[in-house]
Image (cartoon, rainbow, N blue to C red; front, side, top):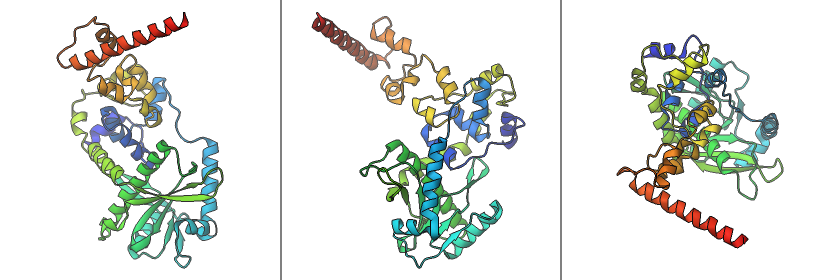
Length: 353
C-alpha cells in the first residue's frame, strides 16, 4: 500500500501534517478526494497552483505578530502572568523545552511527563500517527492542573469581547487542542500510564476585550476528539478508495494540468463553501462543482434530497421536469417556494404603483 501511495504522489516528498491540517480533517468528513490526497501526502497547495486555482491560506502577518507578542507577554518571567490566569501555584516549576532539537525535545517531553517534574511545560513535542506517518506536534503549553491531571493550554490572539468570541475561531481552536489531547493520551499510553490523566477540558487563553489582558476559558473537547478519531481511522483505511483507482493515476504536481484534472476526476469530491477556509484545493473544487447544488452549502444540498444540479432544481420548481419518487417531496417544496416568491414580487410591484 505504501508503494501505491508513493506512486500517487510522484517523486515529491510526502507533505507532513501538523495540528492545523489534522484539525482540518473534521471540516468535510465525506470528501474522498481529500482522504486520498492526504493519505498519499500530496501537497495540495502546489497541486492547486499547478491547476491554476491557488487558494489563500494562513494568518495575516498582523495576526501572527499580535499572536507572538501576546504569547511572549504571557510567558515572560517564567510564565508569571500565565500562572495568574491559570491559577497555577508560583511554587510549581516551569520548564521550557524549546532549545533542543526535535529528537531531543520529544525524548525530554517523554521524560518530563513520565516523572511529572514540571507544572508548566513550554514547547513540548508530541507525536501522532496519521495514515502511517509520524507527525510532530507542538502545543502552546501543557499544564499540570488540579487533581494531578494534565491540561492542554492553547494561546490564541483573537479577542473575547464581553465574554463572547468568534464562534468559528473558537471551534477551530477546540479541534486543534483536541489533536494535542489525543497525542498526549497516546504518549501516556506508551509510557504505561492511564491516558485519562489527560483532561478532556482544555484551557483557551485569549486577549480580553480590546486590550492584551488575558482571559482563560475552559473548553470540553470530547466531541472534537471523537470526530478526529473517526477521521484518522478513515485516513488509515483508504485502501478501498485507492484500489478503485485505475492503474497509472498520479497526482504528481509536475504533470501537465490536463493530466491532473483527469486524475482528480477519478476521486469524488464533496465540495461545500466551508472548504474555502480549510482545504488548499477548495477553489478548484468550487470551480468543478459550478452549477451544482453543492456550491450552495450542505444545508441546501441536504434539503434538496439528492438533486445534484441547479438546472434540475429550476426545472422541477417550474414543472418542466417530472420528479422521480425520491424527488417528489423536494419538488413540491420547490414549487411552493417559487409560488411564494412570485406572489411576494407581485406584491412589491403593486406597492410601487
